[in-house]
Length: 563
Image (cartoon, rainbow, N blue to C red; front, side, top):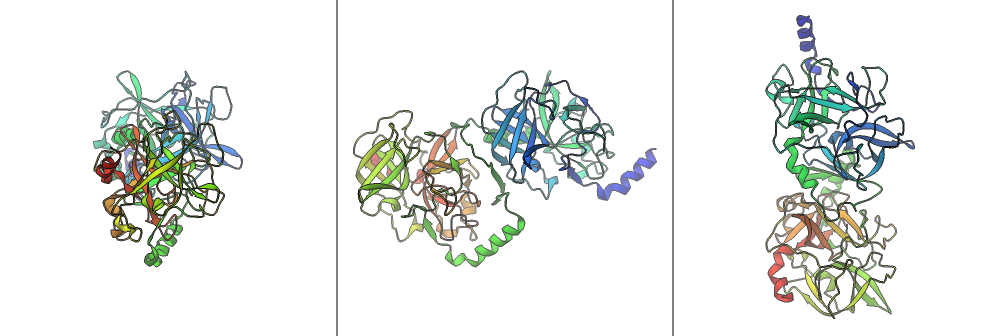
C-alpha cells in the first residue's frame, strides 16, 4: 500500500500545484467532517455574490470587528456585488437569526497576486455597510498575537458549507472538521509542499479524512489557552485532489499579518459611513496599482495610451469654471462627517457659485489652493454644508476679508509648488457638530506608502455625468514620493513639498482643488494635503495620481500668519 501511495505521489508531482478551495460550481468544499452544532462558531460568515437576481454562497470568512470581515484575497479579487450573512447555520433556510449585510469596501493585501498563489498574501478585509449586532449567534473572532506560530498537532477545526463527500450532495448546514496543525518544517519538506509553503502560511490536516474541509476564506479555529482563536484563512489545496497524500490544506497565517490587519481596522473616526452601492476594490502591487474591473488587456491599452501621450502629460488644476469633472466616482459622504470641509464660492451676477474646496483651520481662517484664489473676485465661504444646492438652517455663509497667497506661488509654473493660500473670514465661526476645525500635521511629517486617506469635495458622479450637490468622498491612499517621482510616473514635476495619492483609475479627480486630503494618523483624520493638480491627459490617467500640496511642508508659513 505504501509503495502504491509513493508511486501515486511521484506520478502526480507535476500536477501538485495549489488550487483554491472555492469553486464557482460550489463543488468539493467540506468533504467529510460533521455538521456543527448551530451557531457554535458564531464568527463564521457566508460570503455571497449576486447572480441572476439571487445571492449564491462562494466563500467563508470571519467577523473580526462589528463592521469588518476577514476572508481570502482570491475570493474577492474580481468585481461583484457582495453580501455577508452572519449568524447562519442552514444557508438555504431563513431561521430568523441571520443578519444580511451589504459590503461597502474591499481591501486586498497590497502584495496579493492571483497568478502566484505560492507567494502568499492571500488575505482580504471587507467593510460592512453597517455594524453587526452581537448576540449569542453573532460574535467576534479572537485573533492571535502578532507572530504566534502554533506547535505541531495543535488542535484546530476548519468550518464551512460544502459537500459530505467529493461529488456527493451539498450540505446546506455548517460543517466542521478536525485539522491539527502540521509543523512548517514538515509541510515545507520537498516530498510535502516544498517551497510552495511560506512561513506566512500554516498547514493543517494532511490525512485523507481532512483535505478540502472548508470554504476558501473560512477560518482555521485553533484551541489556544482554553479558547478558539482564528489562526488561519483557508487558501488552497493540491491540484491533484482534495485528499492528496502529504498535501495538507494550506491557510494564510493570520499572525503574520497582524500589523496590516490592525492598520486597516484602526478605529476610524467615521468608521461606519463609507457606504456605496458598489464596493471599492483596492489592490496595490508594489509601486503599481490596478482596478479589479479592468482586464489585463485594458491595462495594456492604458499603458500604450500613456506612452503615446507622454508629451501631453502636463499638470492641470482640478477646478473648472464650468464646474465639470470634480469628484468623478467616489461616494456620498455621511452628512457632516468632514466638518472642516468648506465650499469656496465666487460672486457672478447676483449669485454665488461653488468653485473650490478648503479646510477650516482656525475660527477665522480657511486653507485652500493658491490657484483657486489668485484672481480678484468677491468670495464667500460656506461652512457646515452637505447639499450645496439646498439651504439648511445650520449652514454658515461667511464673507472673506483677506486672501494671502504663498509669496512663491507662480500660476505659470505649477511644478514649482507653493500652491497654498489662506483666507481670513470677516468674523469668527461658531463651532458645533456641523462645523469644526481641521487637525493639521506636525511640521515635516511625511506619511508612509498606502497610508489611508480620503479626499472630499462636491462634483460629478462620473465624467460628463450629472452634478452631485452632495459632499462626496473617495479613498486615495498615499503614493510614496519615490514612486510618484519615477520618470514613468510624475517625474520631476512632483517636488518633496507635494504628496501624491491614489493613482488607480478609480481615484483620479476625486475632489475639488483646494479641498483636503484627510489622512488617518493615530486614530484621527488629519489634513495632510491641499488638492492641487492632476494630469492634463484626464482624470484617470495611468500612473498619474492626484497631487496635493503637502501641508506639513508649510507649517511655519501657516503658523506665522494665523498665529
